[in-house]
Image 1: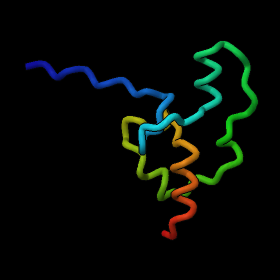
Image 2: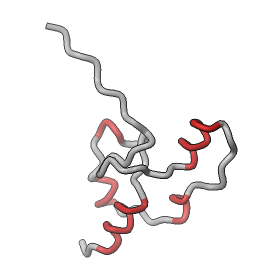
Image 3: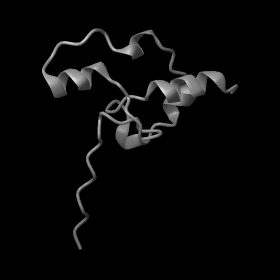
Length: 76
C-alpha cells in the first residue's frame, strides 16, 4: 500500500501551539502588501525552544510570539 503524501505545513500557524504566528513574510505573501520587518527579528529563540519544533516544520514555520514569551519566562 503506498504511503500517503505528507500533510503540508501551514506556515501561518505556530508549529508548537497552532496559533497565528503573525509572520510578516507570510502576511506579505498572502496580501501582496509590503510588511515592516517581522516581530521575530528582535526576539531571542533559545536552542531548547527551537528543538521543540517538529522536524517537518523546521525552517518552514515560525514560532508565535506567545510561545516565545512563554519559553523565555520558563527557566530551563
